[in-house]
Image (cartoon, rainbow, N blue to C red; front, side, top):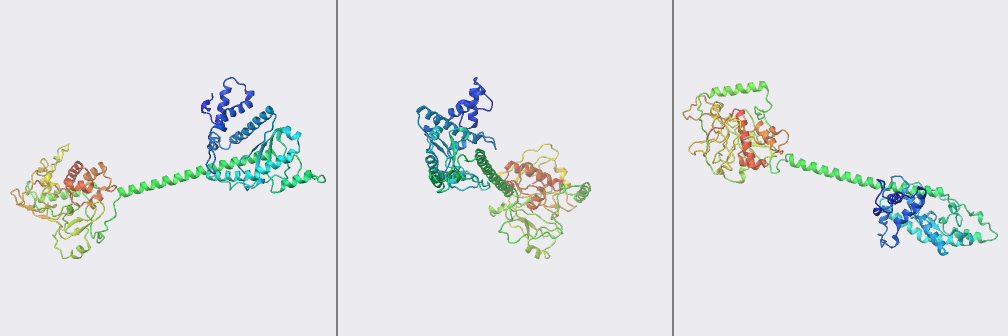
Length: 572
């Protein structure tokens, strides 16, 4: 059996099933000379029992399922389905003829396809009927011709018109469109009774207009009237015209099927594009910063003078590194007399409100360097003393809203210092960072001058005990200016920092490495804009929506950024 055929039990009434049956018989030694008989045998094998299989229900104005089945396996643009239907009618004629010959009776078979010629209207003259009747009966009884012609005309007028209308409604349900077809010219003068092709029992009748057939029959029955003058015998439609008409109908049906497929694919493309756009919107709302909070009374004013400086580790160049190294050396020389154990502690104070601690941070601004003040702060900046600190307080969501200046902190300094243990700078591995439970909401950072950084690098930068309450100091970032400070415990003089440190390349790289894409591109700049001060572990967990261990590791990265900027946390 050929590779493109089906097993005998799986064959259906379609060209592939017919071919499979033929191949089945041919593979068992049947001669090719018997192929015409084999075609009919294959059809008979496939149609056996259809009239009594119980599958006769068809939905209103719809086609039977076999209508689609019969088109399976047909090549686009081929005549296979048309030839299959024509061969089925020939098989009907063969069976009826055999029956008539066997019992000596007469069978008349009238078949309508339901389809019309392109561009034609549903009228009797546009409907064709294939008719079988015994040929010997017409030759022996020629007066049967007008009777049979009237019978077929009645069938076309009363049944064929409605069948064609139903066929068009079924085709419309399958989205077939025949509006683009060219109108086929009607055949000329039609006889009362057409001649058969090839001396067979198959006759092709075309309907007549109303009253035309009766006029032809009356003219033929009038002895003084030449009936052949109006409708000569044997001048029926050309079989080639009939074949081409059927071909046009088939091509129109194929065109409608392809148009339906194209519409389905176009709808699918539209749906896919809509889904893609929806995914893009979801990604944009997930990863892009949200718009500023509607509760903000004013939009932040632009920076008045110079912006907050970028850490030394971001966008560094050789000349820039030299300048920063020189600046660090200058600060180191100013603090040569400072003690390695300078201490700055936070005054223990209870947190006023739990809800107010989530998105607050404070920072000193050095004189001559402006932050992002509010309109109120801008109007009073001239009267403020040069050493008056400005605390930067972020408003609303930490991911979306900018910050603006405030003349005083909105809450008192917090109680505790979070006891964070970090590895020494000489160690090649990072040890785990631990946070005590009592420091879950604490926020503070202690800095000392770079002169004490080297001495403290081998020790823990943060103490594991709470700060003493009898030695209060400002809990925000500071640096020492006095070159007279000694290790005897003198408190160093301080001034506000030019910017609040805490985030840099180490912190930004870690944020990217853990896949925290809310900061997305330009991570370093966004961190500086949104987080101008150091946040503690629990606040990092809440603000960045990261795990506790990730917040601890991020705190270590923040401390390394402080070291790169010459700002080293003091021991508690």
